[in-house]
Length: 579
Image 1 (tube, helix red, strand yellow):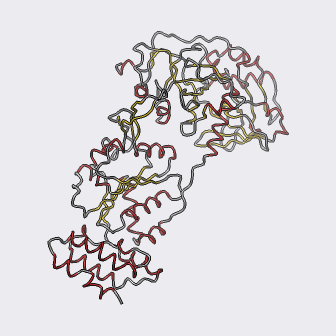
Image 2: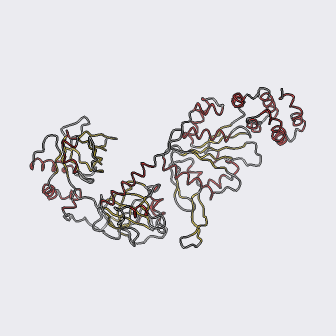
Protein backbone atom coordinates (compact mmCIF):
# COMPACT_ATOMS: atom_id res chain seq x y z
CA UNK A 1 0.00 0.00 0.00
CA UNK A 2 1.37 3.41 -0.88
CA UNK A 3 2.64 5.73 1.83
CA UNK A 4 -0.02 8.37 1.19
CA UNK A 5 -2.75 5.85 1.96
CA UNK A 6 -1.37 4.83 5.32
CA UNK A 7 -2.23 6.42 8.64
CA UNK A 8 -5.41 7.92 9.93
CA UNK A 9 -8.46 8.54 7.75
CA UNK A 10 -9.85 11.87 8.94
CA UNK A 11 -12.61 11.87 6.35
CA UNK A 12 -16.23 10.96 6.67
CA UNK A 13 -16.45 9.71 10.24
CA UNK A 14 -17.87 12.98 11.51
CA UNK A 15 -17.85 14.21 15.08
CA UNK A 16 -18.26 11.68 17.83
CA UNK A 17 -21.54 11.86 19.70
CA UNK A 18 -21.45 12.93 23.34
CA UNK A 19 -23.58 10.23 24.91
CA UNK A 20 -24.25 10.54 28.64
CA UNK A 21 -22.18 8.05 30.59
CA UNK A 22 -23.58 5.93 33.40
CA UNK A 23 -22.88 7.55 36.77
CA UNK A 24 -20.87 4.53 37.98
CA UNK A 25 -18.37 5.19 35.19
CA UNK A 26 -17.67 8.77 36.25
CA UNK A 27 -14.46 9.71 37.99
CA UNK A 28 -14.53 11.13 41.47
CA UNK A 29 -13.42 14.76 41.41
CA UNK A 30 -11.82 16.33 44.47
CA UNK A 31 -11.21 19.95 45.42
CA UNK A 32 -7.99 20.37 47.42
CA UNK A 33 -6.94 23.55 49.18
CA UNK A 34 -3.35 24.73 49.28
CA UNK A 35 -2.67 23.81 52.89
CA UNK A 36 -3.54 20.17 52.20
CA UNK A 37 -0.49 19.28 50.17
CA UNK A 38 3.09 20.17 49.34
CA UNK A 39 3.85 19.69 45.66
CA UNK A 40 7.13 18.39 44.26
CA UNK A 41 7.75 19.61 40.68
CA UNK A 42 9.91 17.46 38.43
CA UNK A 43 10.92 19.22 35.21
CA UNK A 44 8.23 21.81 35.94
CA UNK A 45 5.55 19.13 36.22
CA UNK A 46 3.99 17.80 39.37
CA UNK A 47 4.59 14.10 39.93
CA UNK A 48 3.70 13.60 43.59
CA UNK A 49 1.53 15.14 46.29
CA UNK A 50 2.50 14.65 49.91
CA UNK A 51 -0.84 15.06 51.62
CA UNK A 52 -1.34 15.95 55.29
CA UNK A 53 -1.49 13.16 57.84
CA UNK A 54 -4.56 10.98 57.25
CA UNK A 55 -5.70 11.36 60.82
CA UNK A 56 -6.50 15.00 60.17
CA UNK A 57 -8.59 14.30 57.06
CA UNK A 58 -9.92 10.72 56.82
CA UNK A 59 -11.69 11.45 53.53
CA UNK A 60 -8.30 11.39 51.80
CA UNK A 61 -8.30 7.60 52.13
CA UNK A 62 -11.22 7.49 49.68
CA UNK A 63 -9.17 8.88 46.79
CA UNK A 64 -8.87 6.25 44.05
CA UNK A 65 -6.67 5.69 41.03
CA UNK A 66 -8.15 7.60 38.11
CA UNK A 67 -9.73 10.36 40.22
CA UNK A 68 -9.29 14.02 39.34
CA UNK A 69 -7.80 16.53 41.77
CA UNK A 70 -8.66 20.19 41.38
CA UNK A 71 -5.86 21.98 43.23
CA UNK A 72 -7.18 25.46 44.06
CA UNK A 73 -4.42 27.33 45.87
CA UNK A 74 -3.72 30.82 47.01
CA UNK A 75 -0.12 30.58 45.92
CA UNK A 76 2.60 28.29 47.19
CA UNK A 77 6.35 28.32 47.18
CA UNK A 78 6.22 26.89 43.67
CA UNK A 79 3.51 29.33 42.53
CA UNK A 80 1.12 26.60 41.37
CA UNK A 81 -2.27 28.25 41.74
CA UNK A 82 -4.86 26.26 39.80
CA UNK A 83 -4.17 22.94 38.16
CA UNK A 84 -6.08 19.79 37.30
CA UNK A 85 -4.37 16.53 38.26
CA UNK A 86 -5.07 12.86 37.57
CA UNK A 87 -4.41 10.34 40.34
CA UNK A 88 -2.07 7.74 38.89
CA UNK A 89 -1.75 5.64 42.05
CA UNK A 90 -4.15 5.61 44.99
CA UNK A 91 -2.94 6.92 48.38
CA UNK A 92 -0.79 4.64 50.50
CA UNK A 93 -1.29 4.48 54.23
CA UNK A 94 1.39 6.32 56.10
CA UNK A 95 2.39 9.69 57.44
CA UNK A 96 2.08 11.65 55.30
CA UNK A 97 -0.11 10.00 52.68
CA UNK A 98 1.44 10.08 49.19
CA UNK A 99 -0.57 10.34 45.98
CA UNK A 100 1.23 9.83 42.66
CA UNK A 101 -0.35 11.91 39.93
CA UNK A 102 -0.11 13.01 36.31
CA UNK A 103 -0.72 16.55 35.16
CA UNK A 104 -3.55 17.03 32.67
CA UNK A 105 -2.31 18.81 29.58
CA UNK A 106 -5.46 19.02 27.46
CA UNK A 107 -8.30 20.34 29.64
CA UNK A 108 -10.31 23.41 28.57
CA UNK A 109 -9.22 26.53 30.51
CA UNK A 110 -12.82 27.18 31.50
CA UNK A 111 -13.11 23.83 33.25
CA UNK A 112 -11.21 24.81 36.36
CA UNK A 113 -13.23 27.99 36.71
CA UNK A 114 -16.46 26.04 36.33
CA UNK A 115 -15.42 23.42 38.89
CA UNK A 116 -14.27 25.94 41.45
CA UNK A 117 -17.31 28.20 40.99
CA UNK A 118 -19.67 25.23 41.31
CA UNK A 119 -17.98 24.10 44.51
CA UNK A 120 -18.15 27.55 46.04
CA UNK A 121 -21.86 27.70 45.29
CA UNK A 122 -22.59 24.31 46.81
CA UNK A 123 -20.50 24.34 49.93
CA UNK A 124 -17.78 26.09 51.84
CA UNK A 125 -15.03 23.49 52.30
CA UNK A 126 -13.24 23.66 55.64
CA UNK A 127 -9.90 25.53 55.47
CA UNK A 128 -7.12 23.23 54.41
CA UNK A 129 -9.60 20.46 53.69
CA UNK A 130 -10.29 18.07 50.84
CA UNK A 131 -13.75 18.06 49.33
CA UNK A 132 -15.42 15.47 47.10
CA UNK A 133 -17.40 17.36 44.46
CA UNK A 134 -20.93 15.92 44.39
CA UNK A 135 -22.13 14.02 41.34
CA UNK A 136 -24.94 16.54 40.70
CA UNK A 137 -22.35 19.33 40.46
CA UNK A 138 -20.39 17.30 37.90
CA UNK A 139 -23.62 16.66 35.99
CA UNK A 140 -24.37 20.39 35.91
CA UNK A 141 -20.85 21.18 34.63
CA UNK A 142 -21.16 18.50 31.96
CA UNK A 143 -24.44 20.05 30.85
CA UNK A 144 -22.93 23.52 30.60
CA UNK A 145 -19.60 22.31 29.21
CA UNK A 146 -20.41 19.20 27.09
CA UNK A 147 -16.93 19.17 25.57
CA UNK A 148 -15.51 18.01 28.91
CA UNK A 149 -17.80 14.98 29.22
CA UNK A 150 -15.03 12.52 28.38
CA UNK A 151 -12.75 14.15 30.93
CA UNK A 152 -15.03 13.02 33.74
CA UNK A 153 -15.39 9.51 32.34
CA UNK A 154 -13.45 6.92 34.29
CA UNK A 155 -11.23 4.98 31.87
CA UNK A 156 -12.12 1.46 30.88
CA UNK A 157 -9.56 -1.33 30.73
CA UNK A 158 -8.91 -3.56 27.74
CA UNK A 159 -6.83 -6.48 26.54
CA UNK A 160 -5.39 -5.92 23.06
CA UNK A 161 -4.17 -9.29 21.85
CA UNK A 162 -1.97 -10.46 18.96
CA UNK A 163 -0.59 -13.71 17.56
CA UNK A 164 3.23 -13.75 17.15
CA UNK A 165 2.83 -15.64 13.88
CA UNK A 166 1.17 -12.56 12.41
CA UNK A 167 2.71 -9.66 14.37
CA UNK A 168 6.05 -9.14 16.15
CA UNK A 169 4.79 -7.36 19.26
CA UNK A 170 8.06 -7.62 21.21
CA UNK A 171 10.20 -5.88 18.62
CA UNK A 172 7.58 -3.21 17.92
CA UNK A 173 7.39 -2.34 21.63
CA UNK A 174 11.16 -2.44 22.19
CA UNK A 175 11.79 -0.01 19.34
CA UNK A 176 8.85 2.22 20.26
CA UNK A 177 7.26 1.62 16.85
CA UNK A 178 3.87 0.51 18.12
CA UNK A 179 1.57 3.45 17.36
CA UNK A 180 -1.88 2.04 16.52
CA UNK A 181 -3.97 -1.09 17.11
CA UNK A 182 -6.70 -2.76 15.11
CA UNK A 183 -10.14 -2.61 16.76
CA UNK A 184 -12.56 -5.43 15.90
CA UNK A 185 -14.83 -5.29 18.96
CA UNK A 186 -16.16 -2.69 21.42
CA UNK A 187 -15.69 -0.01 18.77
CA UNK A 188 -18.17 2.36 20.39
CA UNK A 189 -16.76 1.87 23.89
CA UNK A 190 -12.98 2.18 23.43
CA UNK A 191 -12.15 5.83 24.16
CA UNK A 192 -9.16 8.08 24.55
CA UNK A 193 -7.63 7.64 28.01
CA UNK A 194 -8.59 3.97 28.37
CA UNK A 195 -5.92 1.61 29.72
CA UNK A 196 -4.63 -1.32 27.67
CA UNK A 197 -3.00 -4.67 28.49
CA UNK A 198 -0.94 -5.73 25.45
CA UNK A 199 -1.02 -9.52 25.31
CA UNK A 200 0.83 -11.93 23.03
CA UNK A 201 -0.42 -15.49 22.51
CA UNK A 202 1.61 -18.57 21.60
CA UNK A 203 4.26 -20.54 23.48
CA UNK A 204 5.49 -17.40 25.25
CA UNK A 205 2.03 -16.01 25.98
CA UNK A 206 1.91 -13.12 28.39
CA UNK A 207 1.60 -9.39 28.98
CA UNK A 208 4.41 -7.54 27.19
CA UNK A 209 3.38 -3.92 27.78
CA UNK A 210 0.83 -1.62 29.38
CA UNK A 211 -0.46 1.27 27.29
CA UNK A 212 -2.98 4.10 27.06
CA UNK A 213 -5.43 4.76 24.23
CA UNK A 214 -4.59 8.11 22.65
CA UNK A 215 -7.50 8.60 20.23
CA UNK A 216 -11.06 7.67 19.47
CA UNK A 217 -11.57 4.73 17.08
CA UNK A 218 -11.03 5.82 13.47
CA UNK A 219 -10.89 4.34 9.97
CA UNK A 220 -7.31 4.05 8.71
CA UNK A 221 -4.16 1.97 8.26
CA UNK A 222 -1.16 1.21 10.41
CA UNK A 223 1.61 3.80 10.28
CA UNK A 224 4.57 3.20 7.96
CA UNK A 225 6.95 2.50 10.84
CA UNK A 226 4.68 -0.35 12.01
CA UNK A 227 4.42 -2.18 8.68
CA UNK A 228 7.61 -4.25 8.99
CA UNK A 229 6.37 -6.02 12.13
CA UNK A 230 3.46 -7.70 10.31
CA UNK A 231 4.28 -11.18 9.04
CA UNK A 232 1.28 -11.17 6.68
CA UNK A 233 0.09 -8.57 4.20
CA UNK A 234 -2.37 -6.17 5.73
CA UNK A 235 -5.79 -5.49 4.29
CA UNK A 236 -5.92 -3.00 1.39
CA UNK A 237 -9.04 -1.53 3.00
CA UNK A 238 -9.01 0.96 5.85
CA UNK A 239 -9.71 -0.70 9.19
CA UNK A 240 -11.03 0.47 12.54
CA UNK A 241 -7.99 1.40 14.63
CA UNK A 242 -7.03 3.53 17.61
CA UNK A 243 -3.80 5.23 18.54
CA UNK A 244 -1.98 3.94 21.63
CA UNK A 245 1.07 4.96 23.63
CA UNK A 246 3.26 2.55 25.62
CA UNK A 247 3.33 3.33 29.35
CA UNK A 248 5.41 0.37 30.51
CA UNK A 249 7.67 -1.81 28.34
CA UNK A 250 7.69 -5.34 29.80
CA UNK A 251 9.44 -7.14 26.94
CA UNK A 252 12.51 -7.77 29.11
CA UNK A 253 10.39 -9.17 31.99
CA UNK A 254 6.98 -10.17 30.59
CA UNK A 255 4.23 -11.34 32.92
CA UNK A 256 3.70 -14.80 31.46
CA UNK A 257 0.44 -16.75 31.35
CA UNK A 258 1.58 -19.23 34.00
CA UNK A 259 1.82 -16.27 36.40
CA UNK A 260 -1.61 -14.87 35.55
CA UNK A 261 -3.28 -18.29 35.77
CA UNK A 262 -1.88 -18.79 39.27
CA UNK A 263 -3.05 -15.34 40.43
CA UNK A 264 -6.61 -15.24 41.83
CA UNK A 265 -7.21 -11.72 40.48
CA UNK A 266 -5.89 -12.49 37.00
CA UNK A 267 -7.15 -16.05 36.59
CA UNK A 268 -10.26 -14.78 34.80
CA UNK A 269 -8.40 -12.44 32.44
CA UNK A 270 -9.88 -12.82 28.96
CA UNK A 271 -6.90 -13.89 26.87
CA UNK A 272 -6.03 -16.70 24.47
CA UNK A 273 -9.41 -16.70 22.76
CA UNK A 274 -10.08 -15.86 19.13
CA UNK A 275 -10.16 -12.10 18.81
CA UNK A 276 -8.23 -8.87 19.21
CA UNK A 277 -10.01 -6.75 21.83
CA UNK A 278 -11.41 -7.94 25.16
CA UNK A 279 -12.61 -6.06 28.20
CA UNK A 280 -10.65 -6.27 31.46
CA UNK A 281 -11.39 -5.00 34.94
CA UNK A 282 -9.74 -2.25 36.94
CA UNK A 283 -8.60 -4.85 39.48
CA UNK A 284 -6.95 -6.95 36.77
CA UNK A 285 -5.12 -3.97 35.29
CA UNK A 286 -3.94 -2.77 38.70
CA UNK A 287 -2.73 -6.28 39.61
CA UNK A 288 -0.70 -6.49 36.39
CA UNK A 289 0.70 -3.05 37.11
CA UNK A 290 1.71 -4.12 40.62
CA UNK A 291 3.37 -7.27 39.29
CA UNK A 292 5.19 -5.28 36.62
CA UNK A 293 6.52 -2.70 39.05
CA UNK A 294 7.57 -5.30 41.61
CA UNK A 295 9.38 -7.24 38.86
CA UNK A 296 11.22 -4.10 37.84
CA UNK A 297 12.21 -3.33 41.41
CA UNK A 298 13.43 -6.91 41.77
CA UNK A 299 15.68 -6.67 38.71
CA UNK A 300 17.76 -3.70 39.77
CA UNK A 301 20.52 -3.16 37.28
CA UNK A 302 23.69 -4.87 38.35
CA UNK A 303 26.21 -2.13 38.99
CA UNK A 304 29.67 -2.87 37.62
CA UNK A 305 32.42 -2.89 40.27
CA UNK A 306 34.60 0.16 40.64
CA UNK A 307 37.63 0.26 38.37
CA UNK A 308 39.27 3.66 38.31
CA UNK A 309 41.60 5.40 35.89
CA UNK A 310 44.38 4.92 38.44
CA UNK A 311 43.64 1.17 38.52
CA UNK A 312 43.81 1.00 34.73
CA UNK A 313 47.14 2.83 34.59
CA UNK A 314 48.60 0.65 37.33
CA UNK A 315 47.54 -2.51 35.47
CA UNK A 316 48.72 -1.43 32.01
CA UNK A 317 51.67 0.88 32.69
CA UNK A 318 50.27 3.73 30.58
CA UNK A 319 50.29 7.34 31.83
CA UNK A 320 46.97 8.89 32.91
CA UNK A 321 47.30 11.76 30.46
CA UNK A 322 47.68 9.37 27.52
CA UNK A 323 44.70 7.26 28.63
CA UNK A 324 42.56 10.40 28.94
CA UNK A 325 43.28 11.05 25.26
CA UNK A 326 42.10 7.51 24.47
CA UNK A 327 38.88 8.04 26.41
CA UNK A 328 38.14 11.29 24.59
CA UNK A 329 38.72 9.54 21.28
CA UNK A 330 36.36 6.64 21.99
CA UNK A 331 33.61 8.92 23.27
CA UNK A 332 33.99 11.24 20.29
CA UNK A 333 34.21 8.53 17.63
CA UNK A 334 32.29 5.71 19.30
CA UNK A 335 34.81 3.06 18.25
CA UNK A 336 38.58 2.61 18.37
CA UNK A 337 41.08 -0.03 17.24
CA UNK A 338 44.23 -0.85 19.18
CA UNK A 339 46.87 -1.87 16.67
CA UNK A 340 50.33 -3.21 17.31
CA UNK A 341 52.70 -6.15 16.99
CA UNK A 342 52.22 -9.40 18.93
CA UNK A 343 52.95 -9.27 22.61
CA UNK A 344 52.02 -5.63 23.23
CA UNK A 345 48.97 -6.49 25.34
CA UNK A 346 46.29 -5.26 22.94
CA UNK A 347 43.60 -7.64 24.16
CA UNK A 348 44.58 -7.06 27.78
CA UNK A 349 44.43 -3.27 27.36
CA UNK A 350 41.12 -3.45 25.47
CA UNK A 351 39.50 -5.59 28.16
CA UNK A 352 40.77 -3.28 30.94
CA UNK A 353 39.55 -0.22 29.05
CA UNK A 354 36.11 -1.81 28.72
CA UNK A 355 36.10 -2.32 32.49
CA UNK A 356 37.03 1.32 32.98
CA UNK A 357 34.26 2.56 30.67
CA UNK A 358 31.58 0.47 32.40
CA UNK A 359 32.87 1.01 35.96
CA UNK A 360 30.17 1.70 38.57
CA UNK A 361 27.47 1.96 35.92
CA UNK A 362 24.62 -0.29 34.87
CA UNK A 363 26.27 -1.09 31.55
CA UNK A 364 28.31 -4.17 30.68
CA UNK A 365 31.00 -5.38 28.31
CA UNK A 366 31.58 -8.56 26.39
CA UNK A 367 34.16 -9.92 23.97
CA UNK A 368 33.96 -11.58 20.57
CA UNK A 369 36.81 -12.78 18.34
CA UNK A 370 36.68 -12.45 14.57
CA UNK A 371 38.15 -15.06 12.24
CA UNK A 372 38.17 -15.65 8.45
CA UNK A 373 34.87 -17.58 8.54
CA UNK A 374 33.04 -14.98 10.63
CA UNK A 375 30.11 -13.65 8.60
CA UNK A 376 27.31 -11.08 8.49
CA UNK A 377 24.88 -13.79 9.60
CA UNK A 378 26.92 -14.32 12.78
CA UNK A 379 27.30 -10.65 13.66
CA UNK A 380 24.16 -8.87 12.39
CA UNK A 381 21.39 -11.32 11.48
CA UNK A 382 20.80 -14.37 9.33
CA UNK A 383 18.58 -17.32 8.49
CA UNK A 384 18.92 -20.25 10.89
CA UNK A 385 17.17 -23.65 11.07
CA UNK A 386 14.61 -24.08 13.84
CA UNK A 387 11.89 -26.47 14.96
CA UNK A 388 8.25 -25.36 14.75
CA UNK A 389 5.62 -26.08 17.42
CA UNK A 390 4.37 -29.04 15.39
CA UNK A 391 7.87 -30.57 15.34
CA UNK A 392 8.58 -29.75 11.71
CA UNK A 393 11.73 -28.01 10.63
CA UNK A 394 11.60 -24.38 9.56
CA UNK A 395 13.96 -21.48 9.01
CA UNK A 396 13.74 -18.15 10.79
CA UNK A 397 15.54 -14.83 10.84
CA UNK A 398 17.75 -14.78 13.95
CA UNK A 399 19.61 -11.75 15.35
CA UNK A 400 23.39 -12.05 15.39
CA UNK A 401 25.83 -11.30 18.19
CA UNK A 402 25.86 -7.53 17.72
CA UNK A 403 22.09 -7.11 17.39
CA UNK A 404 21.59 -9.08 20.60
CA UNK A 405 24.26 -6.97 22.28
CA UNK A 406 22.54 -3.75 21.18
CA UNK A 407 19.14 -4.93 22.44
CA UNK A 408 20.64 -5.56 25.89
CA UNK A 409 22.41 -2.19 25.76
CA UNK A 410 19.20 -0.41 24.79
CA UNK A 411 17.40 -1.85 27.83
CA UNK A 412 20.09 -1.07 30.40
CA UNK A 413 20.80 2.43 29.12
CA UNK A 414 24.40 2.66 30.39
CA UNK A 415 27.73 2.58 28.61
CA UNK A 416 28.11 -0.87 27.02
CA UNK A 417 31.31 -2.02 25.34
CA UNK A 418 31.91 -4.77 22.81
CA UNK A 419 35.56 -5.80 22.46
CA UNK A 420 36.27 -7.33 19.03
CA UNK A 421 39.54 -9.22 19.24
CA UNK A 422 41.50 -9.72 15.99
CA UNK A 423 39.02 -7.47 14.21
CA UNK A 424 40.91 -7.49 10.90
CA UNK A 425 41.01 -11.28 10.56
CA UNK A 426 37.43 -11.21 9.20
CA UNK A 427 36.33 -9.67 5.92
CA UNK A 428 35.04 -6.53 7.61
CA UNK A 429 32.89 -4.96 4.85
CA UNK A 430 31.03 -8.27 4.53
CA UNK A 431 30.65 -8.78 8.28
CA UNK A 432 29.59 -5.24 9.13
CA UNK A 433 27.24 -4.67 6.19
CA UNK A 434 24.88 -1.76 6.95
CA UNK A 435 26.82 -1.08 10.14
CA UNK A 436 29.21 0.99 8.01
CA UNK A 437 26.53 3.71 8.00
CA UNK A 438 25.32 3.43 11.58
CA UNK A 439 28.87 3.49 12.97
CA UNK A 440 29.11 7.08 11.75
CA UNK A 441 25.50 8.14 12.25
CA UNK A 442 24.61 6.54 15.55
CA UNK A 443 21.01 7.76 15.84
CA UNK A 444 20.09 6.86 12.25
CA UNK A 445 17.72 3.91 11.98
CA UNK A 446 18.26 1.87 8.83
CA UNK A 447 16.51 -1.12 7.23
CA UNK A 448 18.55 -4.32 7.28
CA UNK A 449 18.88 -6.53 4.22
CA UNK A 450 16.96 -9.45 5.71
CA UNK A 451 14.23 -7.34 7.30
CA UNK A 452 13.80 -5.31 10.51
CA UNK A 453 15.25 -1.89 11.22
CA UNK A 454 18.28 -1.12 13.32
CA UNK A 455 20.20 1.66 15.03
CA UNK A 456 23.11 1.60 17.46
CA UNK A 457 22.15 2.76 20.96
CA UNK A 458 23.84 5.93 22.12
CA UNK A 459 25.81 4.25 24.92
CA UNK A 460 27.43 1.51 22.80
CA UNK A 461 31.20 1.61 22.31
CA UNK A 462 33.34 -0.71 20.17
CA UNK A 463 36.99 -1.55 20.87
CA UNK A 464 38.85 -3.61 18.30
CA UNK A 465 42.33 -5.12 18.40
CA UNK A 466 44.48 -5.61 15.32
CA UNK A 467 47.78 -7.44 14.85
CA UNK A 468 49.89 -5.22 12.59
CA UNK A 469 52.54 -7.92 12.06
CA UNK A 470 50.25 -10.38 10.29
CA UNK A 471 51.08 -10.00 6.62
CA UNK A 472 48.30 -12.39 5.59
CA UNK A 473 45.68 -9.79 6.46
CA UNK A 474 44.78 -7.19 3.85
CA UNK A 475 44.78 -3.53 4.77
CA UNK A 476 41.48 -2.04 5.92
CA UNK A 477 39.72 0.02 3.28
CA UNK A 478 39.67 3.79 3.60
CA UNK A 479 35.93 4.06 4.32
CA UNK A 480 36.25 1.69 7.26
CA UNK A 481 39.37 3.40 8.60
CA UNK A 482 37.52 6.72 8.67
CA UNK A 483 34.96 5.31 11.06
CA UNK A 484 37.48 4.22 13.70
CA UNK A 485 40.12 5.98 15.76
CA UNK A 486 43.40 4.00 15.55
CA UNK A 487 45.64 3.82 18.62
CA UNK A 488 49.09 2.29 18.16
CA UNK A 489 50.48 0.24 21.05
CA UNK A 490 54.18 -0.48 21.42
CA UNK A 491 56.11 -2.57 23.98
CA UNK A 492 55.80 -1.00 27.44
CA UNK A 493 59.01 -1.94 29.20
CA UNK A 494 57.93 -0.21 32.40
CA UNK A 495 54.93 -2.51 32.55
CA UNK A 496 57.32 -5.47 32.44
CA UNK A 497 59.16 -4.00 35.46
CA UNK A 498 55.91 -3.43 37.37
CA UNK A 499 54.80 -7.00 36.74
CA UNK A 500 58.02 -8.69 37.89
CA UNK A 501 59.20 -6.39 40.70
CA UNK A 502 56.67 -7.66 43.33
CA UNK A 503 57.48 -11.24 42.25
CA UNK A 504 61.21 -10.79 42.83
CA UNK A 505 62.13 -11.47 39.19
CA UNK A 506 65.11 -9.68 37.63
CA UNK A 507 64.36 -8.02 34.26
CA UNK A 508 67.03 -5.29 34.08
CA UNK A 509 69.18 -7.52 31.83
CA UNK A 510 66.23 -8.50 29.65
CA UNK A 511 64.85 -5.03 28.88
CA UNK A 512 68.01 -3.62 27.20
CA UNK A 513 68.20 -6.74 25.01
CA UNK A 514 64.57 -6.32 23.90
CA UNK A 515 65.19 -2.68 23.09
CA UNK A 516 68.25 -3.64 21.04
CA UNK A 517 66.34 -6.30 19.09
CA UNK A 518 63.53 -3.87 18.27
CA UNK A 519 66.03 -1.33 17.02
CA UNK A 520 67.47 -3.98 14.69
CA UNK A 521 63.97 -4.92 13.49
CA UNK A 522 63.48 -1.25 12.63
CA UNK A 523 59.72 -1.39 12.01
CA UNK A 524 57.35 -0.66 14.98
CA UNK A 525 54.64 -2.86 13.48
CA UNK A 526 56.93 -5.90 13.85
CA UNK A 527 58.50 -5.12 17.24
CA UNK A 528 59.05 -7.93 19.75
CA UNK A 529 56.48 -7.49 22.53
CA UNK A 530 56.76 -8.00 26.26
CA UNK A 531 53.83 -10.38 26.74
CA UNK A 532 56.08 -13.37 26.04
CA UNK A 533 57.82 -12.67 29.33
CA UNK A 534 54.79 -11.95 31.58
CA UNK A 535 55.04 -15.24 33.50
CA UNK A 536 55.28 -15.96 37.20
CA UNK A 537 58.55 -17.99 37.16
CA UNK A 538 60.53 -16.11 34.53
CA UNK A 539 63.93 -17.49 35.53
CA UNK A 540 62.74 -21.09 35.15
CA UNK A 541 60.87 -20.55 31.88
CA UNK A 542 63.07 -17.99 30.13
CA UNK A 543 65.05 -20.49 28.05
CA UNK A 544 61.90 -22.24 26.78
CA UNK A 545 60.26 -18.92 25.94
CA UNK A 546 63.31 -17.78 24.01
CA UNK A 547 63.92 -21.00 22.07
CA UNK A 548 60.31 -21.84 21.18
CA UNK A 549 58.64 -18.43 20.91
CA UNK A 550 61.14 -15.61 20.41
CA UNK A 551 63.45 -17.33 17.94
CA UNK A 552 60.62 -18.48 15.62
CA UNK A 553 59.17 -14.97 15.65
CA UNK A 554 62.51 -13.40 14.74
CA UNK A 555 62.99 -15.95 11.96
CA UNK A 556 59.67 -14.86 10.49
CA UNK A 557 60.18 -11.12 10.89
CA UNK A 558 63.86 -11.11 9.83
CA UNK A 559 63.52 -13.83 7.24
CA UNK A 560 65.99 -12.06 4.95
CA UNK A 561 68.60 -11.51 7.71
CA UNK A 562 69.69 -15.01 8.85
CA UNK A 563 72.92 -13.69 10.44
CA UNK A 564 70.97 -11.24 12.61
CA UNK A 565 68.60 -14.00 13.66
CA UNK A 566 71.54 -16.26 14.54
CA UNK A 567 73.09 -13.52 16.69
CA UNK A 568 70.00 -13.54 18.89
CA UNK A 569 69.75 -17.30 19.36
CA UNK A 570 69.55 -18.59 22.92
CA UNK A 571 73.13 -19.84 22.80
CA UNK A 572 74.33 -16.32 21.92
CA UNK A 573 72.18 -14.31 24.40
CA UNK A 574 71.97 -16.54 27.49
CA UNK A 575 75.22 -15.07 28.81
CA UNK A 576 73.61 -11.59 28.70
CA UNK A 577 70.41 -12.72 30.40
CA UNK A 578 71.49 -15.15 33.08
CA UNK A 579 73.41 -13.97 36.19
